[in-house]
Image (cartoon, rainbow over all chains, first blue to last red; front, side):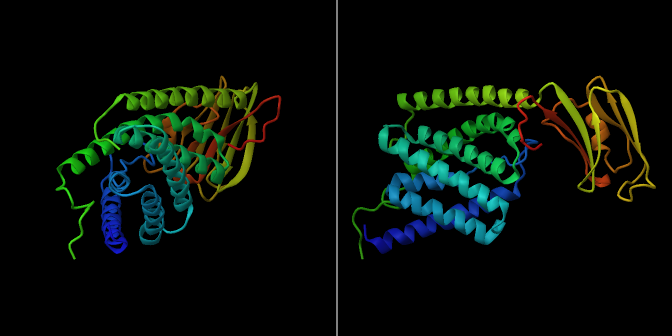
Length: 173
Length: 132
């Protein structure tokens, strides 16, 4: 695939992820826990990893964190928390992707697990409060559930998408 | 990457569950270490540490509205049997008096309308300088 072609596809997917991220923040979850969200935008990240390359996955995640900071949350505490979460989850996902033959479910679960781990670690560092670690097990249980959910959604979307919409072997013009 | 659930996913899922169990154990160890033998109740008003009492001595503290202008009304804090609670306070939703007795260092009582925070501080023999 031509690199411009690929860049455009990734950019479209990125804007889709940003929209999902924004819409998700408008809908409150019926769980009385702060900081919990489904992370449906991660579906798009998994699709990028499936359709393109490892490098593009990293590129996508870095851009997503930056764009969410730029467009919505600003570069405050929340930005650092999500940077740490994305950093750990990207590394963990890529390691599992490289060294095991795990399916999209395993990758998603690992990503979600390390995302919340990174977030809580950053909260502990920023607020100098070790007790946040008590909150981590609950978050991780929810992460596993939401990881399965995002993997299920992206697996279904990838199966049903017409072949060649995202990864096109023969480029016509 | 495959789209169907396979054996390695089960390994990953069990790894995740073991990880969570380890986390629960670890957080319990950390909390119990800091929960140590001797604890204090710290009352913070408008971000300033105003009072510090031993959690093992029973007492009732009355914060008067005249003394602190951030209070919406008189506030009664009770310390009894190693636990602390807000007995009476004025606030729109009365969250902090509804919270009831607290004995854990990890759980502060926060009364935002009155700008009052009550925390329990533990000190172990090794004198950990972790903040609450």
